Image 1 (cartoon, rainbow, N blue to C red):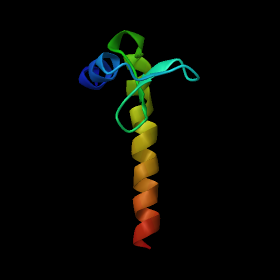
Image 2: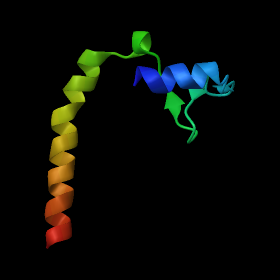
Image 3: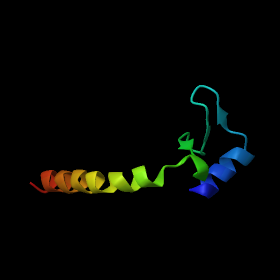
Image 4: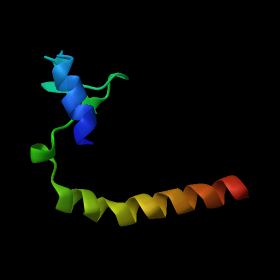
Length: 60
């Protein structure tokens, strides 16, 4: 994650509208100091449930 941010910063891909650096695909690149890792980890169970439901739906 840091490598993407570092590369975007070095390439000076700043998006004034979103107030962030962008990766090569135009997605926000976030520095490690701005990431709330506890919030990120808390979303994992929700993402897992979503993926499982989607897989079940596609297999029907």
